[in-house]
Structure formats: structure tokens, C-alpha cells
Amino acid sequence: MLRLQKLTKTYKTGDQALKAIDLEVPKGQVLALIGPSGAGKSTMIRCINRLVEPTDGGVHLGDMDLTKLGSSALRKARREMGMIFQEYALVERLTVMENVLSGRLGYVGFWRSFLRRFPQSDVDEAFRLLDRVGLLHMADKRADELSGGQRQRVGICRALIQNPKLLLVDEPTASLDPKTSRQIMRLITELCKERGLAAIINIHDVALAQMFVPRVVGLRFGEVVYDGLPTGLTPGKLTEIYGEEDWEATIEKVDDEDIEATE
Amino acid sequence: MPVLEREGAQIWRRRTTRESLVRWFGWFLGTAVFVYCWQIISASTTWFFVWDAPRIADDIWTRATPPKWGYITQLGGPIWDTLNIATLGTLISLCLAVPVAFLAARNTTPSALVIRPIALLIIVSTRSINSLIWALLLIAIIGPGVFAGVVAIAIRSIGFCAKLLYEAIEEIDHSQVEAITATGGSRWQVMAYGIVPQILPAFAGIAVFRWDINIRESTVLGLVGAGGIGLQLSASLNVLAWPQVSLILIVILAAVVISEWVSAKVRGAII
Figure (tube, rainbow over the protein chains, first blue to last red):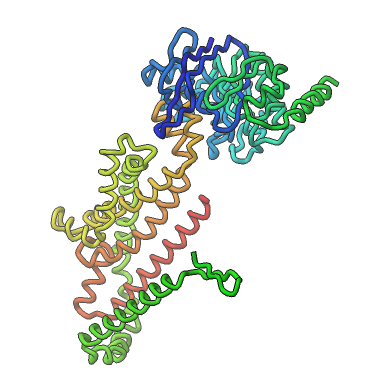
């Protein structure tokens, strides 16, 4: 459903963040994108919805090449791609409800959105989603009153209310504690399964990625160096992605946690 | 490196000897210039008037007290005019300053090469000319009266408000803007949802702060004929009616104190 074709990004400074990436994500597949800081993970997902303009190559969503779109067609295409951010990126001074409804901005005209007159169906859907993530009672709170995990749930609602086909998730757990991180990852993967969404999840935590996703792509210096099952991440592979380090502990920890989870 | 080897120990100094000498010479030069200027000023001062000052001040003080309290009945209208000049001027200037600020901020300007310099020029030129001078110009153009005062205050405040506002716009959290853009919102929606909520507290603070300043500025506009209580002040000064002058000063002081109090309250409520 999503196909990256020789996707390349060269920054003005001359840094090549992405070197001709080829990647195909079938409908409904959740994949984790791992790699060291600066490998181009964030750049890659921002090139997909063109928050960062790719230098070269193509991004095909369905049968449409996103890199060729004009600005109004691009806005239409962005509605199909929900995005979830590392620091939540909620509009801090707006309420939870306003933040969730802001996911409908691509569908609603300026004055309706400015006067907060969203269609009733959108409001119903917002309540449904808030209920699904367990934040119904928070709907009227201001976003900056929420804890990190709660904010990320609101971020998830905002992405889902777009009714997307694809989720672009940028480090969803990087500012959360380990328990909340798992809850958020579980929520994202569950919701993707419920709705048949594809997702690309940038993630630092290899163990967490292995727990929740069926496919892992490893990025290093803007190139794909691993693409396969999470179980295939041997110490050798991890060294190839991240560089030399003792990986046994990381992998063992995963095994422990898996046992814990199945118990 | 100001590290000296002496008797095997490493001695650290903040500056090298050369640097210290240069600094000492700089201070010496500064002091010399100061003393020289002092001499010139002293030579061209008519000291007779300076020695005379306490006596004159005392003389004016005795003439000006007690204030002519009955005169207050004639001051209600002018002080009301002054408040209106300040308030209307501030409102108009805010309407004009908002678009200028968005054009001047690096992250919202449509063109950093053409439009941004124009917006910055508007900011600098309106800010650098005092409101009294604006009033003088406007009185020549649109005639004396309250309206000239309102326009003078409005023009003078554009630069101030726009500058503070565009700095606030440049300091917003970009990720919130990114998030709204990613939903497929239009340029105006991104502005209304991603940027405006972030700058609203700054905007309210700037508006009240400028209103407070404008009350003080509008009290003197009457001196050049632009309406308000300054008109009464200049009339009273011209006929040396000191008891009236002292009463006007008291009224102005009261107005400023009240405006300070209001703006402090409002700012406290916002932040």
C-alpha cells in the first residue's frame, strides 16, 4: 500500500540523510524502524507526508505519488496519514477535545474549525476514541494538565480521527516510563489491528520493538541494513545497525520479558 | 595562555600581562575623556542659574500649592479624552501590528527576502519616532484634536507591539505546528490551531502593557494640540496658573497609577 522508491533526502548542508531507500509496506502491516540517532528515521517518516521535502525518489500511497502532488492535493493526501509524535506535539493551551478534533482539520472548512463548529459525526467519533483510550473524563481538561502517557493517548486519538490508512509514529515512547511505554505500544498495535492500519513506528528501544511488531527495519546512515522478523535480530545484526556493543544482555532481556508476558 | 612556569609550579592568571596592560590603558583613556567632557560642560554652564534653582523651585512650589481644587470640574472631559486616545490608539495599533508581526516573523513570513524587510522597516520607522512628533505631523495633516492624538498613538505603538509579537511568534514550539500541518490542515488552519494558541498569552500581555504606556504618552499629546488633558496643562502653563498646573499633575498621576494597577491585575490574570 505504501511504497518508497529510491527515496533520497539531502539537506542543504550536504548531509545525506536518506540514500535511495526502497521499502514496501503492505496494507495493515505494522513495522518498526530502528537505528541509531541520526540514521534518518525521523527524516524518513517526515519525507512520507512531506513535512520534510524529499530531494529525489517517489512515495507511493496506493496508486498516488505523494512527491508529485500540489499543495491542495497534498493536504488531501495528508488526511490519509495520521502522525504521532515523540513529545506528543499537542497544542498545549487547547483542551483535549479540541486537540482530538484538530485531527479533522483536513476535512472541515476554516470558519467551521475556527468557530469550533465541527460536524456532530466528528464529535461523536472523538468521544468514541477518547472512551477507547480511557480518557473520556478528561475531554474538557487542558492538554498541559495531562501526564505524559495521557497526552500520548490524546495524540493517538488525534491521529486516528483522521480516519487514516497509515500511521506515521515518531518515537512514541521516548519520553515515557517503561510501563507507560509498553501500554502505549500495545495500544497503538491493537488499534492498528482493529482498524487494519499500516504503521511505521520509529523506535529507539529494540526490546520494545521486538515485543510488539512483526517486522523490523534497521536503518544506518540513511540506508536499510536490516529488514526482517524481530527474532532475526542477532547480536551480529545489531552490531551492523548500531555498531560494536555487547548485545547479549539486550536480547536476553527480551526473552525474559516474553516469558513474563506469556505468564 | 596565561599560565606561567615559575619555580616548577604552574601559575594561572586570568589574563596575560599584555591583556592586562591593554585593559589598564583602556580604563585610563575612559577616565581622561570623562574628565575632559566634565570640564567642557562646566565651562558652558551658566552657574548663576544653577545656584538659583532651589530658590526658584521653592517659589514655584509656594505658588502651586494648594492646588486649585475647584478646577477639577473642568478636567473630567479632558482626562476622559486622554483615556480614549490611549485605548482607541492601542486597539487600532494592535489590529495593524498583528499582520505586520506575522509578516516579520522568520517562521511565518511568506517571503524572507522581500516582505520581511518591509515589515521590519515598518516596525523600526514607527518605533523610532516619538508620539509627540507623530502628533505634530498629524496635526498638520488632519488638523488639531482628539483624532490626531488617536492616530499618533496608534502609529507609534505598531512597531512596539509588532516587534514583541513577532519575537513571540519566532519562539513558538514548532512541533505543534508540524502536528497540525500533518493532519492536512490549510495554512490558515495551521495558523489558528498551531500558532495562535501559543502566542495568545504574549499577545494579551503586550496589549495591556502598551495600553499602560499609551496612557502616559497621551497625557502630553495635548501640549502640541492633539487633545486630552495635555491641552489644559499647556493652557495653564502659558498663563502661569500654577495652582491649576499642580492639580492637573495630580490628576495625571492618579490616572497613571490606576492604569498601572489595572494592567498589573490583567497580566496577573492571564499568566
